[in-house]
Length: 65
Image (tube, rainbow, N blue to C red; front, side):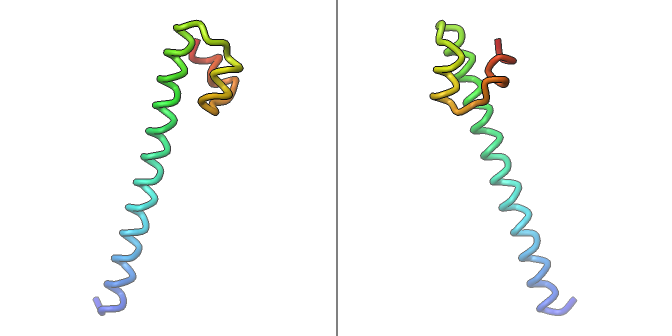
């Protein structure tokens, strides 16, 4: 494999790793928001307030009940 081909392959690998990391971070943040929303529901917060504070959809919060 030529040097330019190796560089392109390496760039592609790095690109995929970055995308995977970003996706993982986003999923982790969403999971954390859901956990917080569950705790808020348990403490009696209303769905609208949880939505405003966590930015989760109303439907998603309803499913956590």
